[in-house]
Amino acid sequence: MNKVLMHVCCAPCFITVYEDINENGMLIDGKREKVELTAYWYNPNIHPKVEYEKRKESFIKYCQDNGIKNVINDCYDLEGFTRDVVEQVGKDKKYNVRCKYCYYRRLEETFRYASENGYDIVSTTLTRSPFQNHDLINEVAQKLAEKYNVKYVYSDYRHTYYEGQKKAREKGLYMQKYCGCVFSFDSGKWNY
Ligand code: SF4
Image (cartoon, rainbow, N blue to C red):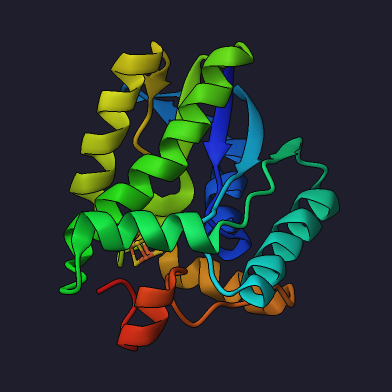
């Protein structure tokens, strides 16, 4: 059975992804397969600290309530993340460049952990959201898959977005109002 390391950006995005994989298996190369799933928390993009803690605690609660194996890579990196974004993006805060760095940073750590701990596949709940740039995520993840020699599986769960939001509210999980970084908070939009 394939061992899958699922990068989880937040609990609300994880619900429908987890439920589908748990009930029906994971869609890999057009076929459903039962897999051994581990949820992986690594999101140093989330600021400020109080927001980071709320989302992390919500992830932990959801995993505990559902008996989901998980790993917490507890990194809150306001200075490092914003410095790197400002240096690479500049004052215009172009979202596609900023988000590419953000995807790369989160997914590289996920692939590194997967490669060092015997996982066969990496995937991410970022692609549950219709507000994220799927082409960019896939481009970054595919490069990392080659670098770390771990397969990447694109989990497109956009069709479950509103169902997932409804379930998260019913379960009393924390619902964030912006994508995560200070720039997304500042812009008043989801990820621009
Ligand atoms: S808008 Fe979202 S994906 Fe883009 S850099 Fe900020 S936290 Fe990352």
